Amino acid sequence: MIETGTRKARAAGRGATVDKQALVRAALDEIVHNYKQANLSSVAHTYQVSLAYVSECVRAETGRTYKELLQQHRLELAARLLRRSDMTVQQIIAQVGYENTSYFYRLFRAHYGQSPREYRLNRLAEHK
Image 1: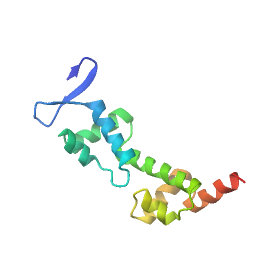
Image 2: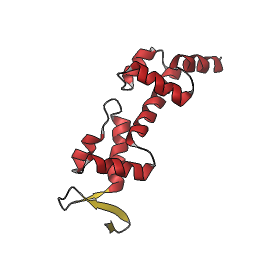
Image 3: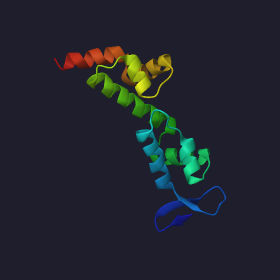
Image 4: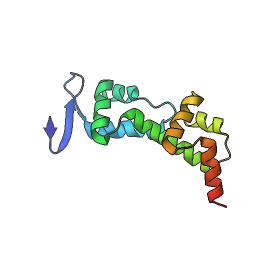
């Protein structure tokens, strides 16, 4: 249903309407403000829509899945911490919300082309 230029959809058969853009903003806010434990379930519950619907809206608006967006945010935060802090890699992994160290290393290497340690050392060398 389209109403005055703002896309809206019926929420879970309840007859209420949900602004898709507000829903996507809420999902993106969840990533920024709750990246350690972020999940779409809380957004879906708040807006009384299905998890699949929130996921579909995020992908339609951003071109990426919620998981991809969350991973990107976490990896960018980890890279910033590697550049600007003296936290250990293990501390950074925990700080950005990963529990599986090998999974984090695999994601980081795929995104940046090097391990977190190599990334930190290369960035330190660039600033000398």
